[in-house]
Image (tube, rainbow, N blue to C red; front, side, top):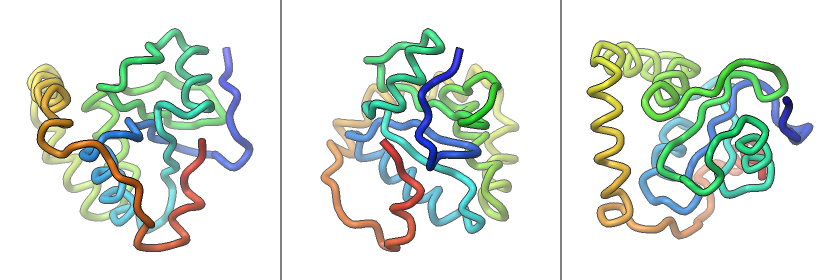
Length: 145
């Protein structure tokens, strides 16, 4: 059961709601934290992400949960919600790993309840994302879809 990955994507990939203001701000934070440029990103609405979700029996219209894929080209279960957030932070050196360690102390059930609450209100608080240029042009190469 494999997705149809783009040849440009290797290693860990974070699938996120490409229309959400909060989600896009979080992706930009991860871009800053990931000094080794390990993470790749794709909107959940994109064809590669949709193919990945379908291939794994995950919802293709529920954009309330981000999906962390540890190895786009390989196997391994996807991590959803706060488990995905923690995995993405752990992929970043320094402050990213420290944030993951702090958040990882909170029990998963509590983290996910808070995540779902924020997901319910995110469009009302942060609004819909209005595309704008990335602060660093080289970051564009880390997106696909």
